Amino acid sequence: ALINASLMNLMRCLREMLNHQPKKRGGMTKGGVVPFRESKLTHMFMNHLTGPAASRTSMIVNVNPAADDYDETQHVLGYATTARSVTVSEVDYNRKCRALAKESNVKLKEEVSQVKSLAK
Image 1: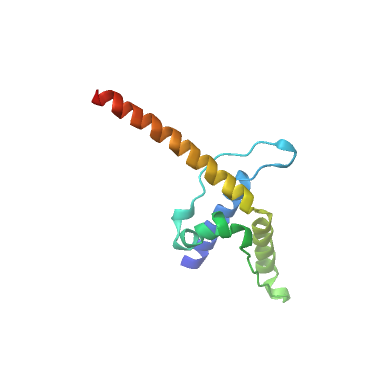
Image 2: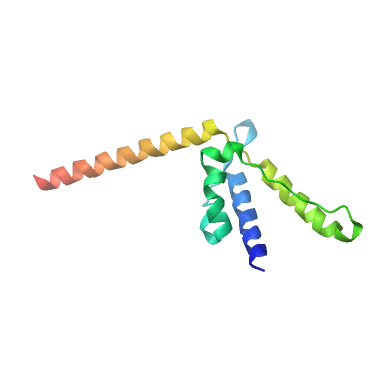
């Protein structure tokens, strides 16, 4: 039962990552937080899905062609379709890291100037 909950959280993370992707034709992306910390599985995969290794991460899906497992196979293929739609390029990752670092530096400089002005 816990693995199913973790897989559902992984699906929620993948869907949220899909919502954060730049849309084709210049569309805007939706905001929101990717819930990586809601399960041990997603927390463990966080760096593989968002870090420098994300452009090299693959998911292997196993399906059973038996007629008895049709519903399960269809569910797994839907899961795989969502996972395949999520793309993270190393260039995008590096660009986002630089933007975050620049933003952090600006905030840090503002805080330092405030502390210096209070010290006078």
